[in-house]
Image (cartoon, rainbow, N blue to C red; front, side, top):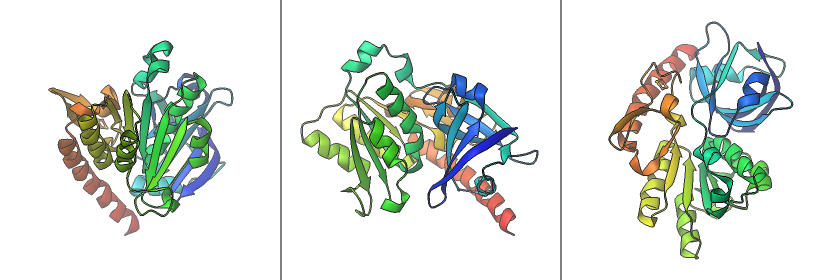
Length: 280
Ligand code: FES
């Protein structure tokens, strides 16, 4: 069993949990994910890793209630536990394989949208620990839905906060903020965008125009995270990939977002159906 040592509500329907899983914590790298299962009847839920503490043996996960499984997960409290906590899975961020000297030369900008801030955080923190400073644009629909702002402030070189409704920070989306930064003379060698599929699509359309190579993380389209269900099948360039096995990170300029979103919509309906069953 994997005990929950901390639970915190970050925003409406968004929760953070520290889970004691020493073997997983020991080998975690930014960009990877875990699969959790509450109990025998529980579904396997893939979740990105938000942080890890190798000494404490804990892994931090962040989840948003989007359906029946995550709704059930919310009922778990500190002292409770997961039956399974498998990971780390997926390929680590390619940043971790880039020579440090090369990284230090690069001007990197992250764009995090909504709960996408959770998987962006360990990458920025990892870079900070290597002495690499980067810019971070993090946004949400409203001020109330912003998560991990304080944590991000500690590790980002420059942090730009945006809200769609203008209730806090820059009024607009991450793409508007990036355009503004570039207009003001900032140049970037690499952009890493993680958030809702539609956000990543529009970031990629913009960065293509700005000629900034862009990496996206296709976590949102995963369903079982095992390579079995096919939900995360995506076309990248002329190749068919599975986000959970071959990713989750890909060259954003090569991803067929429209196809991936269509597939996501189909599975959302399935999740919606099981949500209905739960509330009946
Ligand atoms: Fe099911 Fe990748 S999430 S195959």
